[in-house]
Amino acid sequence: MAEEINQLIEVEREAEKRIEEAKKEAERIIEEAKKEAERIISDSLKVTFEDLEAEYEKKIEEKKNQIKKEYLDKAKELEEKGKANLKSVVDYIVKYVMGG
Amino acid sequence: MSVEKLREEILKDTEKAVSEVLSKAKEEAERIKKNAEEQAKLNIENKKQEITKKYSEKERAELALARLEGKKILLEVETKLLDEAINRAREVLASYKRDDNYFNVMVNLALEAIGNIGSNEVIISVNKDDYSFLERRWREFTAQLKSKYPDIKVKLSKESAKIMGGLIATSSDGAKIFNNSFDARLNRVISEERGKLASILLGGV
Image (tube, rainbow over all chains, first blue to last red; front, side):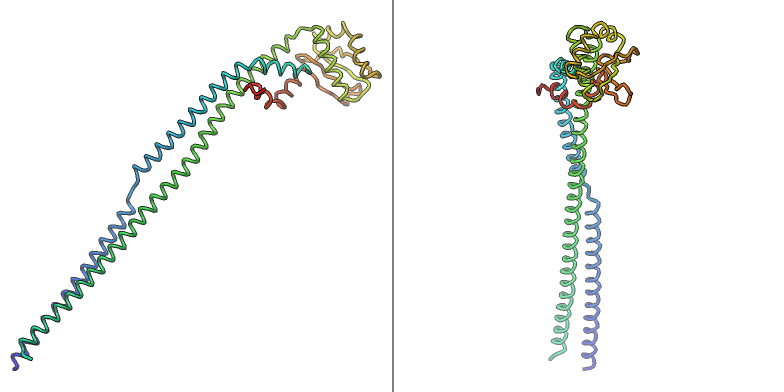
């Protein structure tokens, strides 16, 4: 009988040990998960959008060039128109100055 | 209950407890990782939105600047053309033939000046060429002024004014001056009529 009780005590001890080990394993699993979580968040903060930024830069540059071209075309048109109408401006000034 | 049975029972309960502990830990680990992934996703999305906002502002500022520079180019062309027109007008005015038309211009400029001064005694200053021109036709000149201002007394200053043409009228007491020289009128047309000149330049009128 005593031997049987001892056997049971031994089984209980083994069981407790097994559960303790399982708890440690559980802690390890959670710690590992926390480390993984930190890494995931840290990586997310390091993410760069170089391609997206380059795309935006390119788009802005294209629009700027388009505007510049539009104004240069307008300037050319203005110069041509202005040269054609220069005499009328001179006539207006002369007329104004001479009291016309 | 036999010892063997008890032993089996204990082992069974232990395995159940172990399984529960590990299962809960795995669930917790999954939850932690899932939260981290969601946070990471949010971080990335926020950063993307930040970049989009930054470039949207940059685009607005740079395009506004590009338009401003474009307008500056147009203004420079317009100014260059107006300067050219003003210089040509100056040449025309400076070399204007002293003829009957010019005489009428001088009469009209004098009448305008007298009207502005509001005095019955006026001294008129002109340049050297116009002095000779007006002196020759002085009687006719004053007659035309008197037709509008019968009481007017006009003197032609012997001191020549350094002007392109036109005249400067001064009340005899020197209190009032009306500069109706071509130079002053040219400055007036430049400062007051720039919009109109630009409009003509662009073919608007």
